[in-house]
Amino acid sequence: MADAALHVRGVTRRFGDVTALDDVGFGVEYGQVVGLLGHNGAGKTTTIRLLNGLLAPHAGEVRTMGLDPVTDGAEVRRHTGVLTETPSLDDRMDAWEAMRFWAAMWGVPKDAVESRVRDLLERFQLADRAGDRIGGYSRGMRQRLALARTLLHDPPLLFLDEPTAALDPVAARDVRSLVRTLAAEDRRTVLICTHNLVEAQELCDRVVILRRGRVLADGTTAEVIGAAAVPVALLLEVEDEQAAEARRIAADFGDVRRVEGGRIHVDGVTRHRLPRLVASLVDAGVAVYRVAPEEPSLEAAYLSLYEKGAEE
Image 1: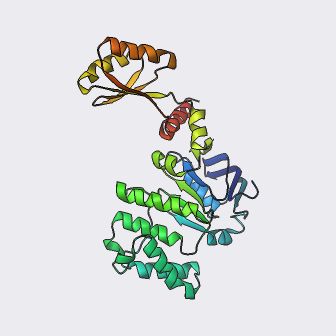
Image 2: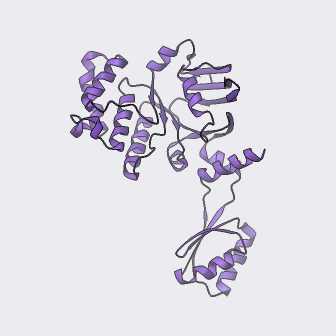
Image 3: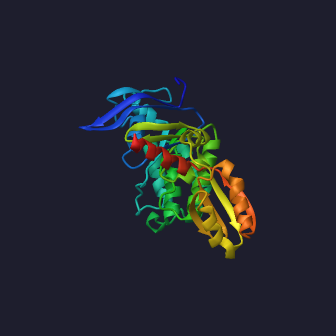
């Protein structure tokens, strides 16, 4: 992992008597989009601060793009872009003023500032409102501006903390699209902290799940789902008027999770009992239009792993 974009090995970090990270280890290859997942207090923010040189580990090794963030923190931060969950924006400025200010802070060459700011504002669909005060922007516009800010110095490594938090579905979709585009360009590496597990499954090549400062799972979403051994759920589609009868029968074979019209979601139906379930429905005169297993989700795997971790 020496040539990895991010390298964390055996890292422990304490705050007084509280151990925020306990022997944590994982790596992120260049060009990957990796989700750092976990409940509040799991250690995600502490990990990002360590990787950016804002904190030092009490034990273990951290490398960001081959550099030691403790001794080379300034150099590390010149090559990273960080989007915090609540981006600090000066509502009194307009987007042009704010971007020029941040460009100066990042040390962007003066002869490149205007073209770079213009390109980013256009790319993030803010050019038409660039002269308006930021205080009048919607949440989605503010988030896009904050994301544009992280790219002013063209960093190869992005840390995104809840990039779509509190956004409406359309704004969240737009931000996810931007993240996918950013990741595809120039092998840009992205580490995303998110509680939105559907988003993580959609965007991430791999996920690392933290629980109380320890790594609970690390792998592709398929590997994590497989390791969690999540029971396969079943979708039955029947005539709407027969849903109640179908639900009664299905309850003898598994756990009926929910009913939406004639669509019945059942957990825990084993493979060898499925033919008997279908036969029972047909014998009862229920018109069965579809029987389909549902692919286990990352959310289901995450919850299952957390529950197992709590039991242990």
